[in-house]
Length: 346
Image (cartoon, rainbow, N blue to C red; front, side, top):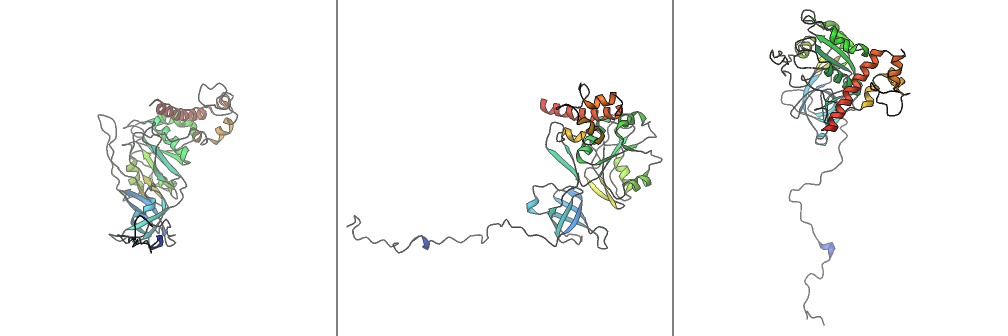
């Protein structure tokens, strides 16, 4: 006999199969990882970004073309969406006041222009997507031109696979020849602009059909040029501080404007352009003629001046390569190497 005597277990007839789970107090189901295909999505072009809201141009060129405001889908919250992006959008795409669509996909990008906060920062910031022309706006004076900053633009363009084009403004204030001499070996397309005779029509024709991103030091006249190319753009413009010689930051956001059958993207003026994210090899790849010769360099060659057995230096001395072009490429490499050294010293 059990020590419990004649005790009978009232739960003896129950087993594990009798257990009942408490109902979900919120009456909801676990979130599914399956996402709809959104076959009804249409393509939009991001023209502006403002605090989690995205301005899109949809059905471009069609009778029902519209400007739409959209938010991003939850699954895209960790992905950067920038001006120039092609995105798939669903929801209310009428463009009516108060309507809100939803971005559900980012289409593959053809190019990405990036910069880091400074040379010591390897975290890159995407500026624009899908641009094929980098319009570098530089003033001949007021403020003084900065060859080193243009070198950085060029390195970023070569890294992204974007064609650089230079516009030198205020050529009626100072002769741009001494400044342009820094870039003679790079075969850069250069336009000169004066206050009295800006090449607006010719430049508009040149950029037609392209997605162009305009960059430039504050005060060089970049936004003024955009306003001339796109009547109605109404980008804020400013003046140079007579004490510091620096331009004031006026355009504070990146915005795209329709330009013919293409787009021009105006970016805020910058005084620095970090290259902490750029790979050294990407600079040399932007010079196919030099890269072919550099294949015969010893392993580990930096291609900088002072490398005794660098084939680029030897070819320039022997006249097989243009000395100016080699010097220019080595200067760009030196800019990037200096950025690397600064990061390691921090």
